[in-house]
Amino acid sequence: MLKTFIKYTLWSLGFFLLLGMFGFYWFEMEAERAWKVINWFGGMDVVSDRRVIPTGMDDIYIRSLKLKPRKDIVYDLRALEPCKEYSYKCMLQDSAGINLYLNSTGIVLTDVDDFLEKYKADIEFFEGVCPAVYETTAVVKELASLRLLTDEKKQIIAKEKMKKIHIDGGLIYSLQTPACRTFFRRKPYMAQAYIGHLAVLMRFADGFSVSWIYLSTIPSVRFIIR
Image (cartoon, rainbow, N blue to C red; front, top):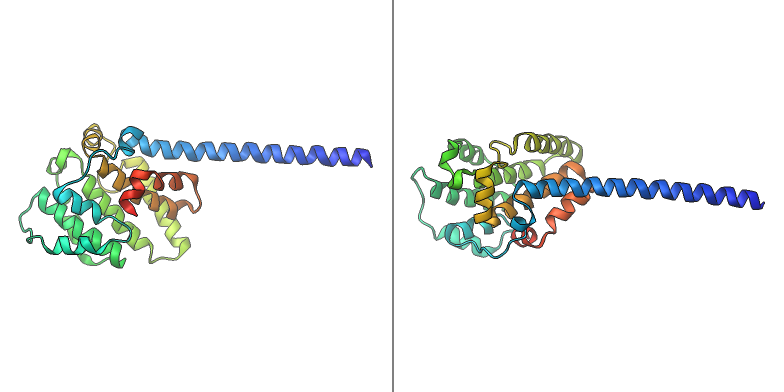
């Protein structure tokens, strides 16, 4: 009986040891994924930086990216004069309107595709030669589309989108460039906004995952999207 007890105990210890090693390896892989995303944008110094406060149209744009927009952003957007020229300033204003609509209703109209097609410009068009605003709105649009699908189909498409972002640096443009790193150092809230919505896309792709949970709970990121 003693031998049986010892044998059972050793088997149990071995099982829990293997389980612990697997858990540690899985956690390490998830942490590496999260840090890889953070490093795309210049590291934690940029991603956690809350010293730079958005002003003017940047402020309205950032507030339009909350997953549950507040009423004040609606009034602020309505107060703006319609922007008809083809410029980065008008793109920023139009993008804020698109973000607000998508986050408020979850409905993807042809206007969204028209916006993305209209402003698919040369990289020099964007502030800092970094299409962060355009790419963030593209991700917001994908999230709204995915929410309408079954969990199985949502996961398949989200994985494809995440694979494209990892390989190409973005859905349409790459944000993994020296110019974007400079831009994000100057305006860290743009990186934080993108990461917040990217974390939601990661959740759709992976289900439960330490990496997206960590990214979405970074205080600076959470402050923008919540």
